[in-house]
Length: 484
Ligand SMILES: Cc1cc2nc3c(=O)[nH]c(=O)nc-3n(C[C@H](O)[C@H](O)[C@H](O)COP(=O)(O)OP(=O)(O)OC[C@H]3O[C@@H](n4cnc5c(N)ncnc54)[C@H](O)[C@@H]3O)c2cc1C
Image (cartoon, rainbow, N blue to C red; front, side, top):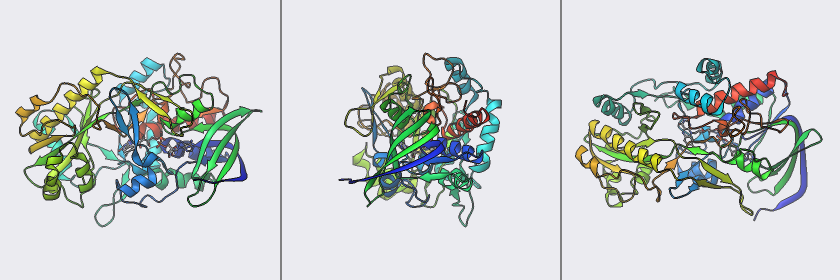
């Protein structure tokens, strides 16, 4: 049981930024560098990037929300994960990087009347973020399990690319360092005089007397929990696309908040190749197939032995292959854009309920994507493909692909997601937007959103670059206007 001290710690600042993921860290840095007194508040712990091995059980316990268990409920269910530590998702992700595609920005301008989202207007903001959180291609040849996917795609006449990563390669075996927030923007924020308090969860916001009052609880491991009360003139909420609407709704701010959360739902397949493609010291795979975007996209997943074992759970009778043949195996994914989901708080529960609407067309599209992915894997030299859906057959040749169903039921644990956004979209269409085009919450003085919840819809590509560039643009906009 957590004990609570009677002591109430009081703090104040010009600006409070809640959440230290890519959105929060970029925003807090710009505000601190503009000379404001800024406090960044993070629920999770402040740990070094390498406090646990990447994608290990220990990392999930240290740095993921709920130890890596998040579930969107509905007729189809999505198991999703989010970071919960200083740096948020940037600490645990693979750092695959893209600028927002023009076709997506055009959709957001058209459907949400979002202003200023032309690629050329955003370019300086991407460039500014990339100057601090560096983006690089692999320094040499990609791991074979990665380039094989591209070879398969090209053999079928489909476009495939090597994606960049938020990474600085270097060192004896080019192991380099990921450019997470704790390595980039958080140190820059601290150098600018910003204050960071970790292990502190904000539970409510209240506006009175021209100021925001935040109620929070600080719970250091092993010590008693303390109540913290923070006052600030302006606040940026950047708790991530699920927790931002939860905090706002709990504080009575509900207009277009938490009604339109979207995911990139993902299906995986394991390929067994004719030759070795996977080595324990391989760098992360980076190839992606672009030919079917914006309907669905495909790529390679982290494929070390424990993750291979997890990916093979739909085929327990073949699990021993992971022991004997992991060097010939790789994990691949296809993902598309989910239907909207609601985020709602339940009395007595700490974390919110996420309910996904049913969209048969989206599930059928994903099933089609899985078939195309299997085609690419056979064209790449796979001798067997194990679709990551319980009850699906093992495929031995391209002709077996016809045995796969034309839709996905999504009732088991097959649908997963690491990309969440759009729960509080920005734009000038007041019928569906939570904020104006620059993240200022409608009808609330001095309240801004600064994370993935602002995005008008799925990005189709890996979203962190978009989250950072939009946060950069919006923070500059607010600073230039002196928060009016
Ligand atoms: C496993 C994984 C792999 C991914 N791979 C990629 C990839 O390769 N490329 C890519 O572009 N994207 C990837 N993503 C997605 C990317 O990490 C997110 O889009 C990005 O982190 C979102 O940034 P954000 O600022 O919106 O929120 P987050 O990064 O989620 O940060 C929000 C922070 O707010 C904190 N918080 C929440 N509630 C409170 C509260 N009440 N009080 C105080 N603090 C609070 C959280 O603890 C968290 O640290 C991946 C994500 C995961 C989880």
